[in-house]
Length: 360
Image 1 (cartoon, rainbow, N blue to C red):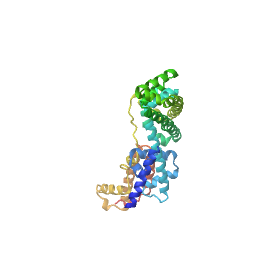
Image 2: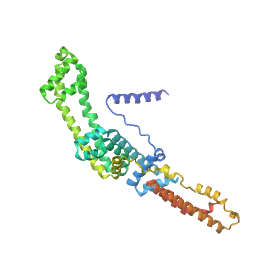
Image 3: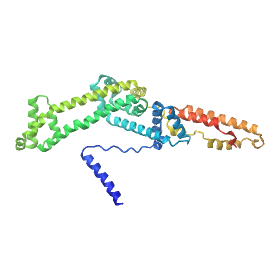
């Protein structure tokens, strides 16, 4: 018990030190294959990923899992599926967090192609279309998604790095000087050097007082000299946003789901295409046990069953299995996606190898 307390406290203190040092804690990845398969949205996305990037062996693996015939060697491959899937979902969530209407407007100001898209549906429409489709894009268009993800990470890292460092330095100097950092930064934005110096001096005089301003002239000079660094950093950030706008525009134009989502935003029509995940495909799907139970009920309506010879009983059995197979195919034909394909194969195999003599 005591050692366990020691171990937990050591981990807690290490996290605390990392936080003070500005080291971000990696989010704990607890997603399981079980959770993915039980979710309508996530199972559909996993199916998209396997259908796009998976091999025939991967599809056979999932068929084994669904039919209860998983092998020990399958665990390694399932673990890789889980890791790849989880990483894509996290990256997509980061894109959704970073892509705001404000950023859409900033990108439009920097790049003509994204400007055309923003002018079509507005910044909110662009954000909504991307949010709606970005996870599926991660699975079905990994190259385009990776380009967006990497550039979003570049913008995010630059803001948390260089921009934050400059901001912290300004705030530190202003705190020591006793002046409001927002007022100082507004004054620093003035291009005319004389006017800028006058404005900063007036703010320092008003907030800190005459003597403090006189005795801390070095800090005032530091603030005045930081303008060049701030301008350079903002110019770099604008370039990163311009690059993101270019990548976004090119990728959105090439992605059918994105175009469809933008079209819906343009005319104000909600998304109607149904997502078929594993839970929906499994619903009402026939099983060998289910078929036997269903035949027992149907057999009660066959008046002369007990007096039929084996050939006569097989006739009823064949008729029942044929009808059930057609019903399963019809039900599944109305659904789309990877899991529908897998279940079609499972249905065919089950009906083709079903021992009809077990229908009694």
